[in-house]
Image 1 (cartoon, helix red, strand yellow):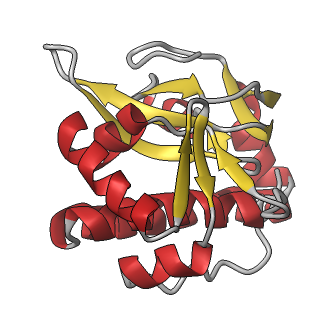
Image 2 (image 1 turned 180 degrees about the horizontal axis):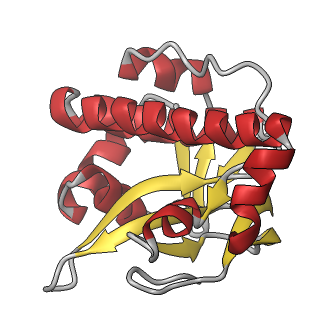
Length: 200
């Protein structure tokens, strides 16, 4: 969808669908940085730094609201409520990245995997998706491996442990969350505490 190093005249808000931000090493190895859900902004870095610092790819069909990047200074001057919302979203993104770094640095492979699935599911719930009767996330084992820095073999073994505990069910099209509270307990994560998320 958007590639690192490009210059876009637009800033986007996700209205529907899921995606992810990632960076590639010269040899093609991919690190997924974070997942995009409704309410998230795409392109704010390029608005301030001149070019995209990462790439973006869709996980499902996405609906985006498009803004002219050049209008951002005017928005900050004339619409302080919207400016605060954008700042809130940027600060929340930083907080999420802190939590993700903690997970990669200190949680075990099982805890990391449980945290990642719980984190994406909790964000999806906060964005208006439902767990009833079930929640299916379009995450493949490769996505999880590329997010957590694990090999695909290690990721597969770790996911099997979550399946055996009846916390997730793995499908061809992704992951079905069976027990969100159980995933959070395995991860030692208390969940999102963000209140009402602004939608720009």
